Length: 204
Image (cartoon, rainbow, N blue to C red; front, side, top):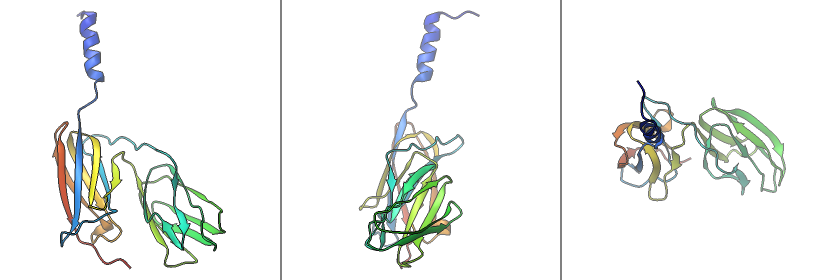
C-alpha cells in the first residue's frame, strides 16, 4: 500500500515530538515535622529504561579547615572528581565502599588528586590522618538527581509520565542503606508533590 508523502511526513513529525514531561516535587521531613536539608533525591523510571545522567561542569571536594567540603556531593556515573588540599597539613583520603574503593596517599597543601567514580552508589569518604573528617559522594545513574534545599524540598523537572520510583537518601536516615523509596504513577505534564517522612539518627 502506498501512502501520500504528506502523511508520511506528518507521521514522522509526530513521532519526533518529545513526550510531555512532569515536575516532581519532594518534601522531606522527620517524624517531628522538621525539614531535612541535604537529602539526596533521585527518580528512576519503572518498566522502561532510565536514561543516563548528563555530566555538567567539573566536580571537586575540597579539604579545608580539616573537613571535606561539601559534605554530600552528587556526581553522574563516570565522573572525575578532584580532591584539592586547601589545608596547611597533609591528608590521606580513602574509601572502602563497594561502589568505589580508592586511596589517595599523603599529599600536601595546594596539591590535588583525581578519582573516577564508575559505579553507582554511595561512597563514604574518610581521612587516614584526621578521624573527624567524613563526607559522601552519591554516584547516580539517572538524570533526575538533586539535594533537598534548606526547606527540605527537592524539585525534579522533565520527568516522563508513567510509573516512577523516588528514592530519598541521607547519611543519618534510619533505614536499610540509609534510604527510603516511593513508587508512584504520574501523568504527562503534571505537577506532582510527594511528602516523605523519615527518621534520622543524631549526627556523630
